[in-house]
Structures are given as structure tokens and as C-alpha cells.
Length: 233
Image 1 (cartoon, rainbow, N blue to C red):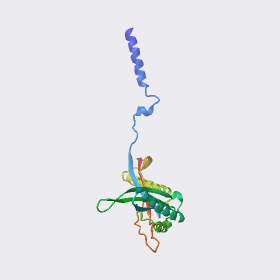
Image 2: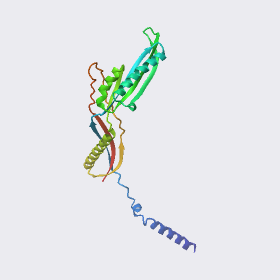
Image 3: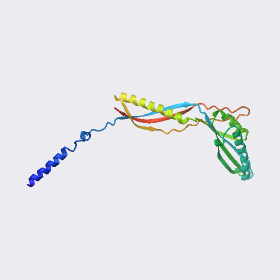
Image 4: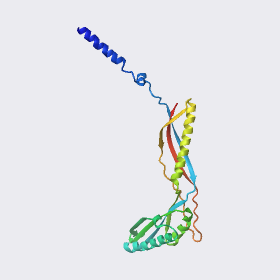
């Protein structure tokens, strides 16, 4: 009797193993997914003429005391701001960058009063006004101008155009490589965008006595780079 029971149990286990794969044909075949792919980088740029500009205007004052130097400099800075506002610059486009006061030393290493300094950053919505407003700041008493830069107001839209071109270049490169490998290009598996930051165009400023300061914005490149992985069929 014990031998018969053992035989029945063994038979039941064998049947369970035999039918374990029924209803799961993929698992039963044990096939691995196709992992062939190609990764490429695409880079493209869109060129445009900048339509906005920015520059910094500063002024310094010397006086026997720190308070007197700061007060004199504040009056000069106010005249510069007033000239820029009269020239059409909105209040929101003016930003104070620096206000400082420090001891002044002569050639003998002795303190000779104090020096106060301040500067304002000017954001121009119209690049064509740059030369005229630089002259206006200098005429109002600015003793230094620096940091002239250019940018596009619609840079985001230009960057999206560059992204589309960069992806197109990546697809073209991937298709070429796939053809050389005797395969065809499949679906996109992964896309990575490389960080991009605007590149200001530097310009050396020279304030002229009788003629408007010439400002040439030139052209600016908006560049985009993407890394794309395609499957291969």
C-alpha cells in the first residue's frame, strides 16, 4: 500500500511540472529581447541679429570723509540715472550693481580721505539705442562704462528651432550608421539634451566727444546639442 501511495505522489508532481508552462508561451521559449542600438550626437545652431543690449555705467567720488564721499557720489549717480530715464530707459530696466566706500591712500602710504563708487546695470530693449544711451551716461558724469553685451528677446524660440535641427542631424547620422551595419533604424529609446547657455558678445566701448558711440551688434549663434539612442532592426 505504501508503494502505491508514493507512486501516485510522484505521478502528480510530474504532471504539475509538465503543465507549468502552459498558457505562458513567451516564457517557455526563453527568447531574449533584441538590444541592438546606436547612440549619436547631433548639434545645430541658429544665427540671428541681437535685438537687445546691456551695459554698466559707474562713477567715483573722493572726499575727506566717508559720508561726504558717499553723498557726493550719490548725487552723481542720480544724475546718470535721470539721464538714462530721460533717454527712454524704463525704471525696471535699471539695476544698481555696486555701492561702496573705502579709504584712499596716497603715494606715501598715508590715508588721504575716502573714495566712493557706484554703478548701475542698464538693460536695453532696443539695441539701436545703445550708442546714444552710452553717450548720455557719460555726458551725465559717468566715469566708466563696461560690460556691453547683446542678446535676443526671442532666444527660447530660436533655441527650440536649433533643437529640432540638432535632432534631425542625429537621426541622419544614426540612419547612416545603421545602413553601414546592414540594419534599419528603429524607434527612439533615449534623448538627452546638453545644457546650453547664452553667450554674450563682448564689445569694447569708446565714448567719443562729438559723435555717437558706434555700436555694432553683429550676429549671435544659438546652439543646441542632443544625444539620441535609436534601436536597430
